[in-house]
Length: 462
Image (cartoon, rainbow, N blue to C red; front, side):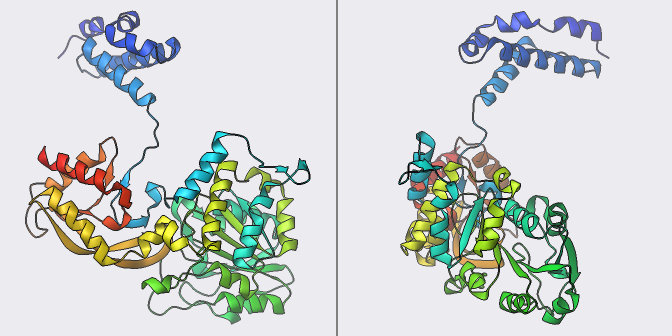
C-alpha cells in the first residue's frame, strides 16, 4: 500500500517542468499557453493515477511525456504511406493515388490566385462549374453536369432538389448500406423523398417497379451494390429497362453508380463494372458517381444528366453547402483530361496498377526478395480493386512473403515486422496471412521500389 500523500508531494510543479532544459527547446516553437496546458494535463493525469494506488511518475518521465505530446502536435497527422496491401483502392489509405499532372494542377490551384469564379473572356464573375462541366459532357455525352464534395452529397442534393415529398422506387436488394454509415434509406429520408421498396433481397423484376408506380411517384432509382455481391439465385433489372419504364410513365430514372467507371473493366479479366457512358445512353435523368474511385482522381461527387434537372440542382441551397473546392476541382479536371486524351491507362496510377502484367510484378517481387534475404520468398497471390468497386473481383499477382510457413507454429516474425514497418517515418502497410507478412508490388508505385528495398534491408537486419 503506497503513501498517497507522499506520492502527491513527489509531483513537480508546472513551473519546475517549464524551467527544465528539455522544455526550453519547445518554447521557441509553441506558444507559452500551449506548453503550460500540456504540462498541466500531464500532471493532472498523474494525480488521477495516484488516486488509484499507483506511484507518482518521476520528473523525467513527466517531461518525456510532455515532450512526446508536443512533438506529436507539431507533426501532421496525415502522412504518406507505402501501400503494399494489394488493395488498389484502399479506403483506409486514401483511395486513388493521382497522376503527376493531377497533382501539379492541384498544387497550382493551392499556391496562388486563379480564375475559379472569374470569366476571363468577359471580365465578369463566372461559375466554378463552367470549368468542369464541358469536360464531363464531352466524355459522357450528358447534356449537363455538376460537381460537389462527394457522392453522398451528390445523391442527397439530387433527391432533395427533384424528389422532395414524392415517391422514389428502389429495389429492396439495392436499399444498401456502405462504409462510413452511408445508407440509402437514411439519405432518402433526409432528402425528403419517400422510399418505396419493391421486389425481394435477391430477385427484382421490371414488373415489380411498374406495379409500384403511383401518381406520387417521381422516379425509379437504381443503386449499384458497390461493396458487396449477391450470388446464386439472384437477378436485377438493367438500367436500360428502368429508364425505358420511367420514360413510358413520364417519370425519372436515377442511377447511383457509386464508383463511376469510364473504362471497360472486362478487358482486364474483371467483371464488368457499370460504365457512366452506358447510363447516359440508357436515358437516365440523373447519374451520380465518385471522383476518387475508378475515375482515379480526387474526392468529388459528380452528377450528370438532363440540363433541366442539373439547372434545378445548381439553384438548390445544398449545392452551395456541398460545393467542391478549388484544389479538388483543378485535380478532377486534370484527371478527366487524361480520359479525353486516351491516356488514362498510362497516366492514371490505378489503371496502371489494374493493367500491370504479372510478369512485371514478378520481376519487382524478386528484387524485393533478394534484398530481404532468406526469410523471404515470392509466391502466387491475388490483388483486389477495393474501394467499393468490383466486389469480389481479383487480379493475379506475385507476392513477397516474409516469415514462417503458414502450416507451422511461427515465432511471430511476421507480426513483429508488420508493427515495425507501420511505425516507420514512411510506414509500409502490408497484410498478414497465417504466419506470413505479404507485400504486393501491384499497389506500390514504381518510384517507391528503391525506398521500400532499403526499408526491408534495414528492418530485417535489426
